[in-house]
Image 1: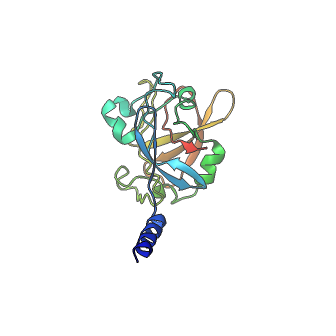
Image 2: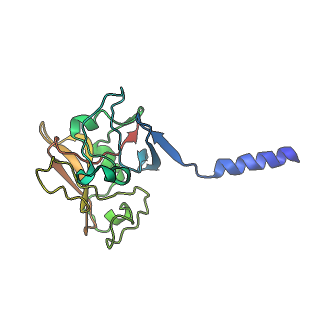
Image 3: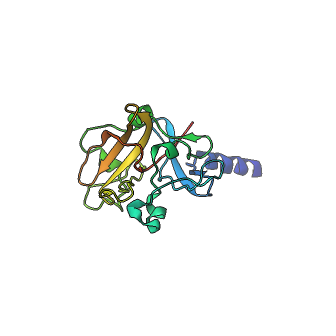
Length: 192
């Protein structure tokens, strides 16, 4: 009887969804979720060192270090290519486009964190938890904090620009647009 009870207990435990997390070189822990056939981080990266422990350049959301915990950090392209945890990588356009449906109305709210996009009809039913981080630019331009998020792709548009995937306040579609690689954008890593 004891063995049957133990077997049932193990079987029930195996059927429960398990939360998965990844830890970066700074010791930050990120929840993950399988979406579009890949394992994705569901929070923005906030690491301050590369895999070898060397300090890296980054931007704080809205130029405010207090925002880092909730919004992550923003990275330029060369830095973003080096900072994903071991076994993880910066997603390509193919990864993003397997995950997202671009240009179609009523898609963006499925990805937006309900606590950070008030009045936007956000549901975050995907669990991806997009937050409006804006972008980093050393104070040259308005950083659009609270209005948009630009996720970086590893894929380049040409020798000068990189691709980003954009969520915007008041908009229910997701856009793709080229950007200058020296600005800071949000980074989500994928496994593999």
